[in-house]
Amino acid sequence: MKNPVPVIVLAQLFGTSLWFSANSAADDLIRQWDITPADLGTLTNAVQFGFILGTLSFAITGLADRFAASRIFAVCAVFGALANAAFALFADGMDVGIPLRFAVGFSLAGVYPLGMKLVVSWVPERAGAALAQLVGMLTLGTALPHGIRLAGSSWSWQATILVSSALAGVAAALILRLGDGPHLKRRHDAPPLRLGRVVHSFSIPRFRASAFGYFGHQWELYAFWTLTPALVVISGLASPGSSALSGYAFAVIGIGALGCLAGGWWSQRLGSARVAATALALSALSCAFFPMTVAWPLWAKLGLLLLWGAAVVADSPHFSALSARACPPEIVGSALAFQNAIGFAITMLSIQLGTRWIGTWGENIAWLLLPGPIIGLIGLYPLWRPMQAPDKHAA
Image 1: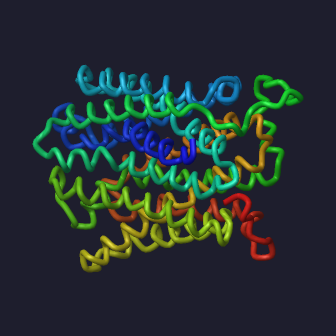
Image 2: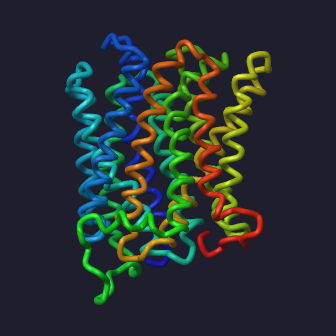
Image 3: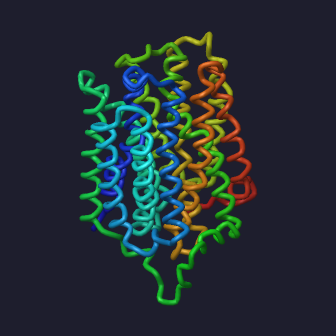
């Protein structure tokens, strides 16, 4: 295929719409299930925990590199669509909802990391820019349920979630038809995929620096996405349950796609490491200033939230590109899955604390997220320090 990247990124958009589909129904779930915002954090963390166990399974066993990435992606997208649909149709409380959201998360372990591997298998020479498009679609996929809810304001929350399931089914069909790229095929002389071999990727300094930058980034990213509707309400931009809230939440999360695209373009000039460092610095500034916006006009509060939404994910594809180039090609899928597993384990703590404390912390909850980008900058320092030449090959 002449240009497979648009197919992969479109499939990523559709497949990852499963991730936060339940969060688009937050107000309805709180009312109908008689639950609290902390319970919504638990539902989100069920997805994260499923994703963690899924990525660990793929990484430690080497399955991510034993079978065609396109087939794993397609099977997992269908499985996730079915679990998501079951949540909409059959869940009537936390007891049923938690295991179904866990199943969605487990399936996403075969969608997100394998989507990255598919990009590298087709266009390794421009992995940074292509992965920027991919993560941009992940971001839009995260925001998409809020957009669907806004467009179908008269729909039930179940209908919104079912649309995400249908889109994931389309994603499976697109990737199954595309197949794998010609790169990253196992060499005949490659070492066997022994159980746990992927752990040794952390002995590679460049992989380790990229991974630790990613871990700091993850402390902030998914907690920010989970808290976005609450941050919009705290800012006074919209009231709970309003269509305006869905619109603002879609805009604040969705603008991250533009941040990813801009970072991908910029990385071709400065290199992935410096783009990631710049995004981390902007995220840190947004975290630091948000609690000080109480007296700001609404347009200024919205501007800061949009800047934060653009910066918070703009670095994500570059961690993947840097890590993919740092480790041996025969374990790229497993290494990325393992990196994801650790990163998403970190998100569980920040999500749980953020949703539990936002009622008492208010706008100060942003300071809970601030250590993430700061630690990320420190971890990534060996790759972006001023005396090092830009790593344009990682872009």
